[in-house]
Length: 115
Length: 229
Image 1 (tube, each protein chain N blue to C red):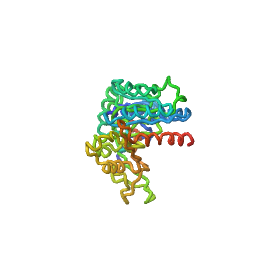
Image 2 (cartoon, helix red, strand yellow; image 1 turned 90 degrees about the vertical axis):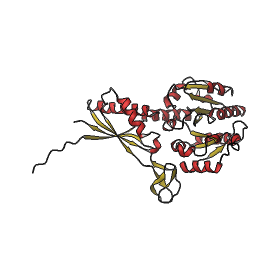
Image 3 (spheres, one colour; image 1 turned 45 degrees about the vertical axis):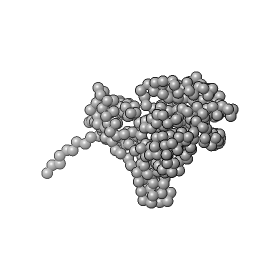
Image 4 (spheres, rainbow over the protein chains, first blue to last red; image 1 turned 180 degrees about the vertical axis):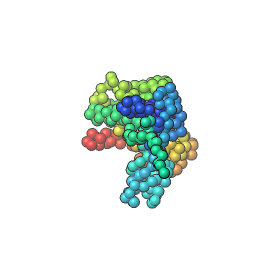
């Protein structure tokens, strides 16, 4: 259960960004999360409640955008989705690929600020 | 017809890797390892899959071959693993993580404070036994091994695809028990290749020594490739 460490990281980033803007309140925090990041969405949402409790971001929502895995397919010569995380082959032509272009994301991508 | 003012939240785009601090520290460690000429291998697996036995054998054989190996070992609470590894005569240091389920770059950095890296050829980092959490954390290693024992079942890679996907080499351990548990090598290998196409797979028995030569033979080659690269 390392999602709590991840949630603390999100809190730190949010605090820094808020401070940089004169302590503005953050309504929501947008994340981009890939299946290969090693972080589970549900666990992260629970961990966020714990981490943000009794901080000024207690009411800030986490908005998680799940980023599907994409690889470079050597046969298609293009970016392609995979069949699944258990079957890392091009969804179009079934060629195995290890060149992961997306799916490892673990990012804070945007903040919704209160006016 | 007057337009109602629409109150829109002000959205600012940012781009922060949540593990940025760990990644920066891991990057710094990698640079220090490179400068000192030490090749760094980390090991991940579930508890009880034979990381410590594999590492003890590896350290002992490397010592016999006149290399200078050392190990850092992560453990939740005990120093049993470090005590076992110390039998190899290689320098070993315990990192007690308490309740933390994985190692982070900062722990490696701290554990190395009083070690001279340029006096080492190989540094091994044994992660906490866990197939989930360690996958997110870069430790500055050159090579990440994921161990899978024959007694765990062939479908482990499908159950934990992320850790297999973030590793470089799979090591199937406890080969001496393969017949007893009717281990299906083809199924295991197919599952490994499905989650990480092209992944090299080693088969070893730390007990009988089978497969250890093949594993050790790859190390100096990999280390030399790193130094020249």
